Length: 217
Image (cartoon, rainbow, N blue to C red; front, top):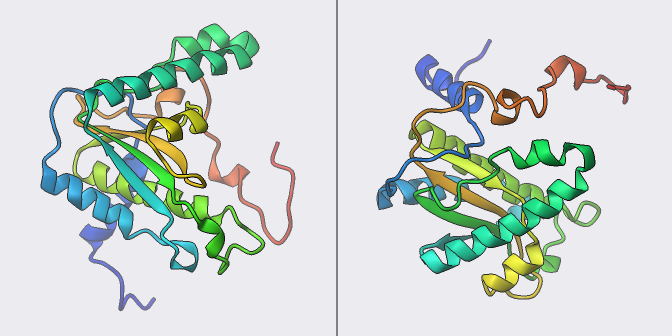
């Protein structure tokens, strides 16, 4: 096997460790993140791939306590709506901790830029590739955070129109994720939703196909 461009064994192990030990964190302890580390994490996000090199991601750092609480209120509002929509699992859902907005050291909002219609390369038949590009940036940030010993939680329980208005986003731009970032007491040994009994992970073997689609249920 030609390993001319491979990392060292130690570096390779570090990459896989970050991927496998990444967790969607909801519990944080007090403490601000050093500015230089935050910059490195955002730079890692900015090195993500993007279709047609459109770089559609935008990150808004929330430094106002008043704004942080307003975002928290929006999430709580949608949390109740989500609980109601879940029907018989409503009370079970309400017992879950779904965010750490008021506890995390840094709060970011990741969004899609406006005027995305200008970008056609790679999006003519798959316009949602702009969203995929933002997701790649978020994943880069997540893995870099885990490597630095920081926890990150992706919160998607919010009304995007209300959050966009709260943040003064221009028409056509759209918030995608509220990102809670900070120090933690410990990382969950398994995804929190697995530990809480909400869902079970499925093995790769059930999701892998060859040459054509096959039923996986």
